Image (cartoon, rainbow, N blue to C red):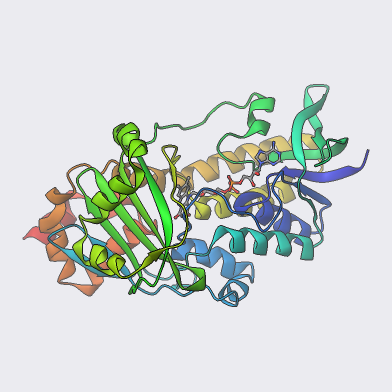
Length: 372
Ligand SMILES: Cc1cc2nc3c(=O)[nH]c(=O)nc-3n(C[C@H](O)[C@H](O)[C@H](O)COP(=O)(O)OP(=O)(O)OC[C@H]3O[C@@H](n4cnc5c(N)ncnc54)[C@H](O)[C@@H]3O)c2cc1C
């Protein structure tokens, strides 16, 4: 058996980034994924500045721009009677936003991991963990032809998505969980003029518009989770009915062409690509502090878990609030005041972007000042 420092199962946003960061630090890394890249996945793909800033820090943002992904410099947040236009603050000097196809982004990350020296095996499926004296010491894998292989590693990381077979095999407890609040379908459209990313929020409905590669626009139309069965019975009709709540968009779609089938889900766990990047960054630092000593590794991984939870929880809580799609009109008087000031609009966009906490903006003194 080969001995790796770190074996990573799943090589998309979290796993390929981690493989790249660890390989850049000189560790012997094996990443495996049952997918073959370029590979798509069920996900829209909008990245706020905190996410693009990670790519900039890793010297990958210019490479992403070079793939022809359109830069997004404006956010339109439309609440029916009022639409806010602006953009969030830069993070570490990066203000630009992108919505790259996952076929492109994930492939770029896999290439970067290989370039850094990590071994990435595609079409390779994780089967089970290998244990010795109560610790994980590797994994049993299977290649595309069904040939089994055992790989030994000091650490095995499950970056294998929301159904994580690695977490299941390890008997890992779920740290934080919330039932999905929305469901929906998205499709790609050709010939939709846009002025940036567009969000339309209505009671029990939302529409998200993301300009992406090849002149296409990814458009999501969502409903409250309890409507999933109704939606599934008439996907196109429900999708169009939701789009009809944003007349300016519906008008633009009349002269546009849908170029993909609808993809949908009712399983929206509430974490995003930026959280995957953050997890990779924090875990790479924690592993560098802990390897190869087992006792030091345990304490640095425990510190990683707390740091990841503490950093992501405020954004997760805001995501839950936004995803409830409950009574968005009640905040319209606040949005009207926000819209009058570029500074307040930026702060509001900073909440959407996860740059500042929900409670740092929607708190009684600020609301009172805005409404005064
Ligand atoms: C509908 C939808 C819309 C979304 N929109 C956005 C958005 O606009 N912006 C945003 O930031 N985030 C969005 N997200 C969230 C985003 O998709 C996830 O945060 C992101 O994909 C997480 O990346 P990951 O690398 O952790 O996992 P994943 O992307 O799920 O990758 C996991 C990988 O593990 C592999 N794997 C699983 N099991 C095995 C196995 N047994 N053996 C080998 N490999 C295995 C899979 O093949 C896969 O490649 C959305 C999610 C959904 C569902």
